[in-house]
Length: 461
Image (cartoon, rainbow, N blue to C red):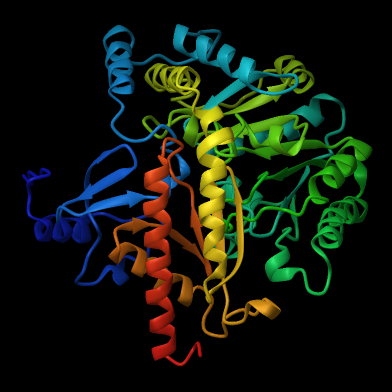
């Protein structure tokens, strides 16, 4: 029997990992002799790996560790709940206190009339729920042909078959195919796709693609439009100011449901509890996960408006998961929300550290490699370019330069992620001003080293 611990030598951990562990979104053969970086502990905004390196995590895990690592209160909440009621389901007219309390708390926090919650184990599961829910909704209203859902190219809604189909990541679509009845329009990425249009013109053009798609399909066949308020995994794409008001006008005009995927954007990431509040959206359904428990327990869900909840509540919705509203996950999420409220973490992001991060992060815009800096709250991106004056892409394989920069970040003990040739950040919401300074200093060093590498390859002057 293999017995491993944090004291096991790194080489042995990597050997066993390579032999038995299949990593998500990874070509495992490319791990090579180097192997995976093995993280053994974490505290606040910092990780420690098996070689003893201390690493600033500017991605909050996968956009999720909002209150930072090592909060004992969440461990205690999980322990208390495990001793009292470690598991029970919420099927067949049954409930339990943690699920009831969390649903009520989310109804208080969510904007508008989003007052009901269907729990899932992740954002992917929640978006699968949304797909079935909106189709069931229109069926129950006597419009069964209204079953087409429109998403966006380069949007991300999870990696189950249903959620991946709603998303617009073509590389994912190529592996296993997509579900029928899902269409896509272009993303509002002005830097890469705006051409000669101003950002405002481009925002309107991209929003009006939704109306064109509705008319192409037939308004009596369109069930919903799903989108992230800010595209996260697509590269922190923040739409021009004209985009979302026009989207809201269009969904209102044609009476289709609006699903705001807040899996990344929710729970303080934008300096509001939800990005829909920051952008003035009125969604019928919000997808939640990640920051709901700060990643300490797997939990997600759909917060549903009164009208949709009433219709769904009037039929037997043949849908659910073994772990829908898991009591331990709900208890941890409740404690996470209590900490965020008591410590005024959302307000701190809105009024203090968010503006400071924006100021410091935007200073990277003077680097020769950086063409565009976009940031809202605690999520931002840098578009890398060989010529910022004409918004030129690199002519090498897409993602190569971003990958080089990501590797330099790793070498400098900074976790930044690359999406193509965009570098992105999403640090824990509890990051301090001093840690923000460290983040920007290490990012600039990594950009400098990337530039030297590109000059050596003849890709930059």
